[in-house]
Length: 211
Image (tube, rainbow, N blue to C red; front, side, top):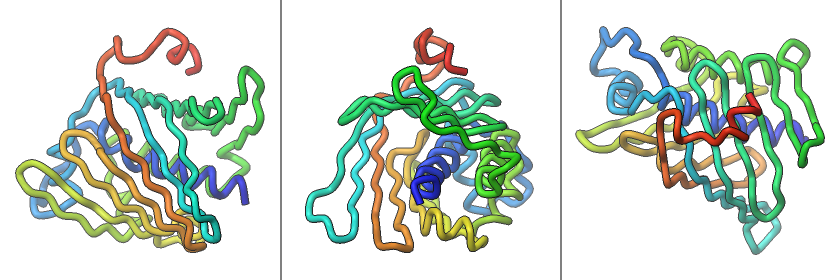
């Protein structure tokens, strides 16, 4: 169960921030909301910032709060560093997902051995390469966009993916601002992104070294 919940978080990151680093894809159908959103988003090679996460668990009155930093490197993956309440780091690449506690590897998921990891990584890197067909083959996409903002809901088509993540709602403008995941269990996670920076100076030497 821990693995599935972590994969759900990973997929949120993949879907949200991979969208922000998509290289231009075929825009033959301008009425398609996914393509409209893609055209609105900035496309930096390096994207870093702050996240604040609130998780509401069924049966618990008080939500679980956490915050930290994230970095997305086009073609390499995602670094998700929780700073509070307890420091830990997730590194997500094409081949694996690694969970660090300090300098110790607490968990490693190999995409070759874990079908859900393989599916998630497929989504990530198809987005990074501008192949939106993979996104719409795995999700029912309901989105809208105006001149300054956009919203999109993603509902997994695959049973394994649906069990891991439920329904994802995202909104933003040039960058993703908010994400909400409603899991089948009734748990609910909200993530707010801020202090967005782009370019080579956005990532620290320590963070770059983890890739």
